[in-house]
Length: 149
Image (cartoon, rainbow, N blue to C red):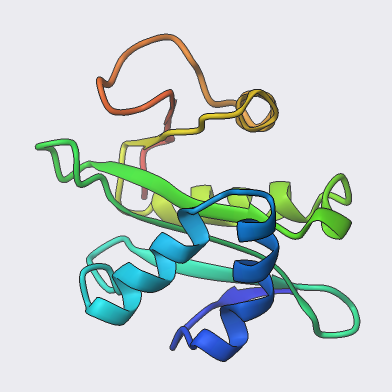
């Protein structure tokens, strides 16, 4: 099940935070720090933070979209903080979560950007239709969105 992750709580996020830090990924910690400080609450126009749960109700993935802070264009959104628990990878949950983010973003944005620093992240986003052809200076990947109606 995929649903909005709001309000975000440290207790709910803790399993993902622990797993991500064990893998030496800091972006889930950054998600929490920005949320807790009020810097990024995923409450801007077009923003959304989603959580994915397995059949037992355990949190297995998180990811969000919001206006791209690096673009001076309100029609550009950015995918951020997508993390899938190691045991839930290759089950399709990450793809479903990102497709939900894309569908939501298409209502507000004309393009999505993101930055990934891993080869498996690059392959994941490319498989979802994102391009790695350089276009935005602060992004490794981007996706043109269909016109919203």
